[in-house]
Image 1 (cartoon, rainbow, N blue to C red):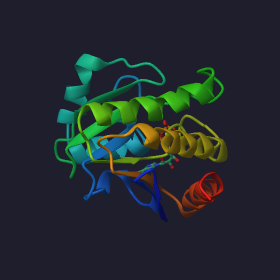
Image 2 (image 1 turned 60 degrees about the vertical axis):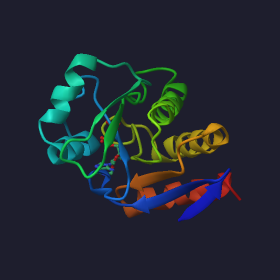
Image 3 (image 1 turned 45 degrees about the vertical axis):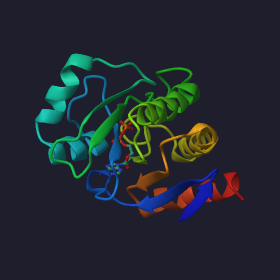
Image 4 (image 1 turned 90 degrees about the vertical axis):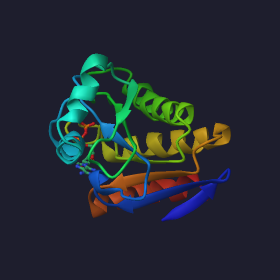
Length: 177
Ligand code: ADP
């Protein structure tokens, strides 16, 4: 599914964030230590190689809502933007912290003159954020940011399961009719 909003293409696809060969930048649903782990962080660190964790070391630990940028090493991308999402029920207020992840990632992308970026669904795995609530925040914030973009031309949500993809697509259709 794809739509143009304020001249920016927004897409929802099912896939693996570690295999976005046509995107310059991928977003990591990182942990505070910027190390490998499960889910998205595990997939990206495995594909990038040990240099990714080395590159994160001087910036760690990061705070919920924060985003930092590194090179992408053996990944098929130029950059990784690492966002620490809120742990649902723990880091509060979780909705604004999740919003900040998308805002800060997009701000970093713009500062680095990045043309396209792929996001996973931040916080909805190990961090327990209910997918429907998280999808609404993610899509709303990305759509809002399209008004201010100079560099980004394409923003992709990469969902890992069919069900997650379905929920993102429905949310997207509701927000952009
Ligand atoms: P968090 O710790 O922020 O919750 P996770 O990596 O545990 O991050 O999960 C975030 C979301 O990403 C979940 O919905 C999960 O299903 C999904 N996910 C897991 N692995 C991948 C992958 N390789 N590519 C894209 N999405 C993934």
